[in-house]
Length: 77
Image (cartoon, rainbow, N blue to C red):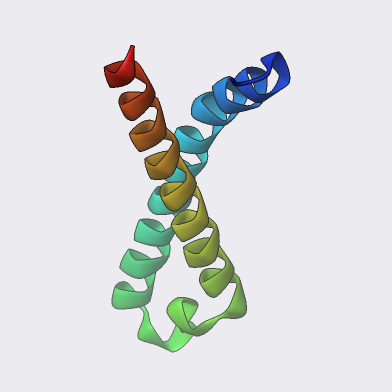
């Protein structure tokens, strides 16, 4: 049985993580386009770009796991 606190955390994550995923995805797209226009700037090679990709991967994974969990929980009822 899930606790009330766990429900609150899951609801909060489901509200926040999709937005973080969208923001980091768009940030990476912008960096990619700028890097193609001006390769001398080397935006894709910076450490910050790797952090953006890491945040995107983590948010996408957690969001997907939560959605799968909630769909399974809903189907069991």
